[in-house]
Length: 133
Image 1 (cartoon, rainbow, N blue to C red):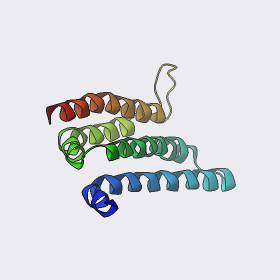
Image 2 (cartoon, rainbow, N blue to C red):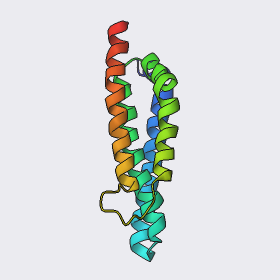
Image 3 (cartoon, helix red, strand yellow):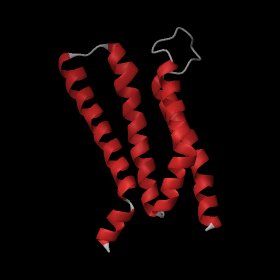
């Protein structure tokens, strides 16, 4: 029973573990490098913090798919993730690290908002896929 579960959800478990491992790596590098020796604010605010939040929420998001059939995760990857995640990365990298405007968003807010928008897109998609089957 457990072996069948792992075999069917191999892709989902792998993506969840990879996202969690990279988020953990970013957290450890942030805590040791940035608080121990001090790190460049551009590195901290431009890469470490936004990608920590992005990968943390994506790991939780991918773990959400463990409760559904594997074919729903695979169709979600084919229909939504292949275009949304590259656009989200483009939005994160095109956002300036520092801005003089009070109303501008930083990279961490773009990553968080992007994952929330992904959840808003995905939940109806999963419900529609389950209802259709």
